[in-house]
Length: 258
Image (cartoon, rainbow, N blue to C red; front, side):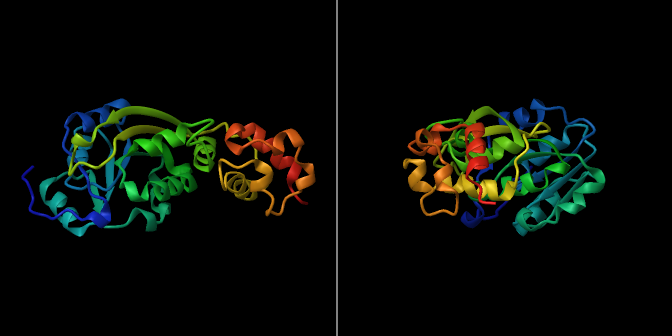
């Protein structure tokens, strides 16, 4: 594709892939033959082009920058491709349902990674699996099971998704290079989630437990509306980072106020 004269926009977190190996890894890691695929943030279309080299059924691209939408539409002529000039965070995912399940392949805009992941969690019924690129720090946080970096996001996304870390990507793979390393990450909605009573309230409880991760639970929960008396003494002096999902769920069942 020809090189465009379009200014990169910092507000959209635009870092475009320049290492040709990365789109190849993304499109070869899972089988997308015959699949309905969507991409978030196509930029100048490097990954878009690689996806269309595969025998997919359809590709939907969501790109917020109208200049890059126009550029990619002009550069790639393929009747399997539909490009939407839309912010993925405002998209009504009901439009995906007639052709579900979908596969997501994307180099996510880093400043909205967590909002996008939450959107995928809300609409995981349309998602078959995904390979996304995120900051290395974010990827490590999502797979932690204890200690530093382990917290609400680790527990929340591990509950809803199987997560696997893939290739680590250096800044030099992008133009302009970001200041951090990146990581390809595999996601698949879980079908074996344990039951959580009062699920929305449980996640609020988890946020309270991790309010200050280095503090003991009894201090983090002191100002919260839970049954403090029901917290076993040996648990009250622990930090939330020392507790597994099952430990926290057991505690939740004790401290709920009916």
